[in-house]
Image 1 (tube, rainbow, N blue to C red):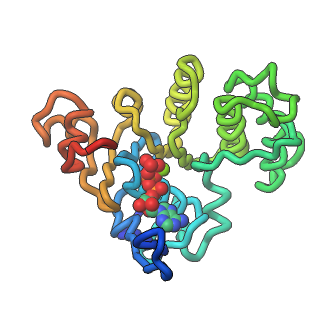
Image 2 (image 1 turned 30 degrees about the vertical axis):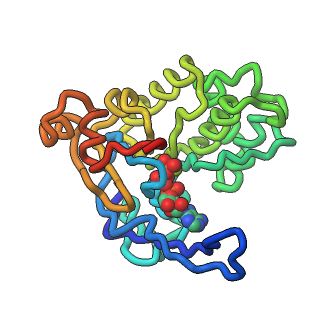
Length: 259
Ligand SMILES: Nc1ncnc2c1ncn2[C@@H]1O[C@H](COP(=O)(O)OP(=O)(O)OP(=O)(O)O)[C@@H](O)[C@H]1O
Ligand SMILES: [Mg+2]
């Protein structure tokens, strides 16, 4: 179970007002602003929000990759500020950067991560075999990951994040770049994690995916939680018939890329 309590993160950026400006001015962006929610075991919780809303920043803080400026969070009772090593053992993380060791094969990438997690060789091998089969990577498992397609790299990264059979799984846009069949397997995999009683928190822009998978939805806009409830409650709160329309109403804007 993940408990997030008023988590806040600010970034300071330097900007030039014009191409000829001699000095850059400093600007502060509050990427995540007092974000509060819970994600339960045996449930899939969706983190939604427009580009730049603060989803990845929230997930990076929960992954211990980024320190919050204020607020707190815990995972299965382990405190984010003081028990980072315990948190890393409990978590499977698929971040927004899916960096792999390109000289290593898919299997070796998974095995390497298993070692970092303190698993023994036999368990790691067995687990890698299962994941390679589940992810449909049989034909690629022993090839160096250099040259893998975006979707293939994604699958290896997913395998790596699940190798130590974590109780809590954080996935940042897990179906990004996957083809239809792989997207389906990814959704099945998420359903499987839920059936095993795991806590799954994932970000997505795909409403159909969110509707199909999520028990609860947390919507963030400009760093703030603007909605926390079930997909059904998105409809009942907004009085709209589709999740997408409800989402647009809740984020308080129908401005898109070209607005
Ligand atoms: N390292 C950083 N330095 C400066 N600003 C940052 C940094 N990381 C994130 N931001 C800013 O914080 C805000 C939230 O970014 P974040 O990546 O969390 O958004 P997101 O919800 O994941 O968006 P997307 O849907 O596009 O992935 C954005 O305004 C972004 O520009
Ligand atoms: Mg993101």
